[in-house]
Image 1 (cartoon, rainbow, N blue to C red):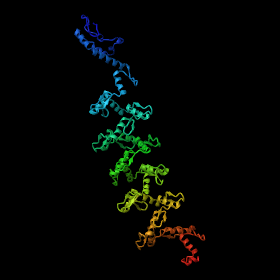
Image 2: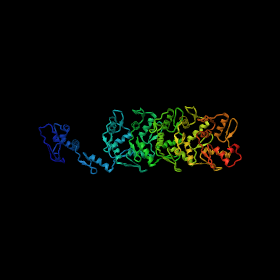
Image 3: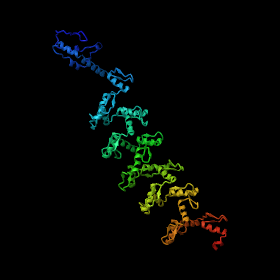
Length: 631
């Protein structure tokens, strides 16, 4: 068998032959560069497929086979490709990044990454892709096709690679590790995102506000805040969301599904991330630290919220009143004050709340539960915020200052209430008597004076009080506790306000002035009493004799004349008095104390009234009794 021309111009075939079959090596047409090793030797199965020819070869048959030279060339290409797979040879290199490939077509596809060429377009949404395979995977989003299923949980995936990544959640395999911190991930993409944290790389930037992101997915979510797009809606309540994952999380509110349980306290959660954050309560772990003040937080979200305090950033504003907040949750809570919506109700007393956490704290008033304890004095509080406020008393921290007078406060609410002194604002009014107050708590306390409600009772004497704070102050009478001390004279008081009033004795401060005579007083109550001198008002009347008094104290003393009550007794001689001041004067006799001195002769007296009588001797007051003049 002789082939005289590559172009097929002439074919001479020896008709007489002893062989009834042609060998496969005769059919393969080798070039000079293929002399070293026959390609077919790599694939014996291909020898079997082409080794059999008709027993009586004719010129027509050979000519037909020569027309299929292109098929032979294709076969050679396939063989060469498969050879590189087995040998690992990668002879095609990228000029830009140096990456090598075993096939030229793969190199061409790779080059599109550098050129940005995206020749494959989705007919449904117009999105373009670099590779045909990625387009095919994308099309399954529109068709909903998920041909790959998980044998463990039945979850279906749109691509084989997604299924492989998903399977690692069951096996726990995390083959991709960070060289910087050693943290491991189940997918290469998650590792790449994590590495950007170490590099401080944020390649995705918002053109509207300039904010930058580590991940494209977070950037896409952020962009929806500008467009307002919320593609995913809840069928139960109609609420719409930016992300499908957030919708899925929201749906668990309606279903009540909480598949994740804490092994320590058996509390259940709708999300694994919430369980992980909760576990840090038991472990005490706080892995996230603030770079500014060093405060540590148990979750990244708590740290992000905390950082806004230092930045002073308040990106969330109320459309009704313009008030701004650093967190969206705080804005949502504030909005309920405009709508009056209080969706959380107490089953015991019916009181309703804007926020679930406030209801939980309130419930402790019924159960008596106080889970938060002070390490310094052992005092226990029903909420963490109350404990934090209490701790400031020990460390002396007063972070909230008044811009007008410089006074500082432990608690922000106390500062807000104090500011109303300067502004004169009293936003809370009584519906019964129209009296107005600077705080809601003061109004609530006042309202009980109209209803007569006194829900808090003393266990020692059964006396009842309209507020728990009043009961606590009253109990100090039985315990003798006086926690407030004067730094100047050491005198102690059971009530903080009494100490403040007492301090005016040392400072000489008289902040209350009479508009009629300009006389000044240390106490508001004394000013009110003094004003009755000018008005002649005597609002307190004795039921026995009808005598009227300008203050309640004088009425109480007068009533003892009718009842004969003398509650104040001398421990030394047993003499009893109806007025405490009279007992105090009497006690000076036993002590020999004479605090009042005469400026004329130096004589000293045990009471002011005795001194006044003595001074009249020097002034020749004829109205003095004879017995005094003889003395």
